Length: 430
Image 1 (cartoon, helix red, strand yellow):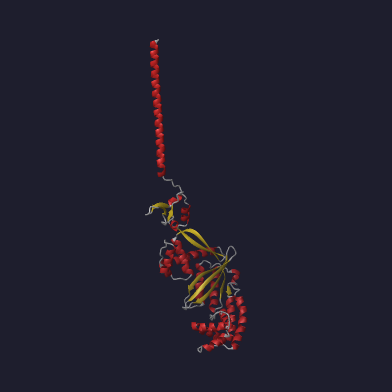
Image 2: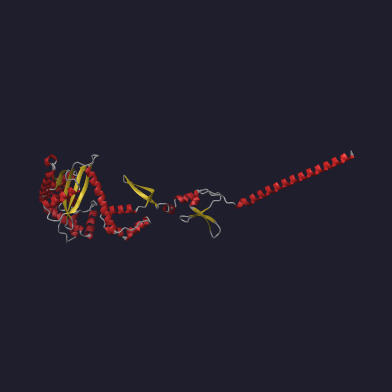
C-alpha cells in the first residue's frame, strides 16, 4: 500500500510538472505573440507620418513639385513655369483652372496645335470663336496668293519686313515666302480656278458672251471677255474668262482672232448663243467674221439671228452724249471750275468755309470722266448744289476764270432733271 501510494504521488508530481511546463510554454508563446503584435503596431504608428499620400489626379502630369529657397514647396507648371500653392487637403481645382487658360500648354500639344481667334461675318455681325487649328504652310501660301491677286499687290509684298513680323507674331511656325514662290502660287491659283470654271461650263448647253476694249492710263489696250450662263440650279452666272493685252491695230480682223482664240481655249466655241458688243464699227466686222467661222462647222441657234447683240447701255450713252453736246460750253466751264478748285488743298479749304457760311450740304465736288455721261451727270448735280458758292469763291481767287453765269446754272438744272430719268434706267441694266 505504501509503495503504491509512493508511485501514485510520483506520477502526480510528474504530471504537475508537465502541466506547469506546458502552461509556461503557452504563456511564453502568448507573450511572444503580444510582443510581436505590439511591435508591428508601433512600427505602423511610426511610419504613418512619413508615408506620402498617393496622387491620382491627372493634373500632376502637367505639374511638378519644386522647393523654393525659403523652404516652401510649390507646384510648378511644366509648360509656363507658373507656380501655385499645394493645398494640404489635396484639392487640385485651381490647377485645372490654370491648365485651361495656359497658352503654352495649348501650343505644345501634339501636331503643333495652336490657339487662335477666328472671325466669322454673318449678316454684318462679327462673331469671335476660339478654336484649335493645325498650322498648314501650304494653306498660308494659297491664301497669300489669293490676297495678292484680289488686292492687286506686288509679288514683293510677301518679303516686306513688317508683313513677316506680323506673321511671326501670329504664329512662330510661319516660314518666309519669297516673291518667286508667290508668283508661282498665283499662277497655280489661277489654273485651279480656271479648271473649276471649265468644269462648270461642260454641263452648260448655251452661253452668251460680252466683250469690250479698255485703255489704261499707260495707253495700253486691254480686252475683257465675259461669259454669262444659267447653271443647273437655274441661277444666272457670270465669269470673266480673259483680260488680255490687245496690240494694235484694233480692227475687226484682230478682234475676231483674239475672241475666237478665247472661245476655243475655254471649250465653248460650239455653245455660243450670242455676242454682245458696243456699236464701234470694228465690232461689226469682228462679230460678222466670228459668226461665219462658227457657222461653218456648227448650226447657230435660230440661224444666227440673235448672234449679234448691241449693248443697250452704250446706245443710251450715245443718245445722252448727243444731247449734252448742246451745252458743251457750259459743261466745259463747270468741269474746269471743279478742276481748278480741287487742284489745291488751300482752294478746297476756302470753298468749304464759304459752304459752311451759307449752311450748305457737306458734299464734295466731283470731277467726271468725259466719255461717261453718268459721271458728267454726277459732276453737274454736285456743282449745282454749290452754285451760290462759286461767285463768292471767285471774289477771293483772282486766278479763277471759269465762273458759270446764272443763265448757265438754269440750263444745268434743266439738263440734270432730264438726265435723272436716264440715270434710273441705267441702273436697270445688270
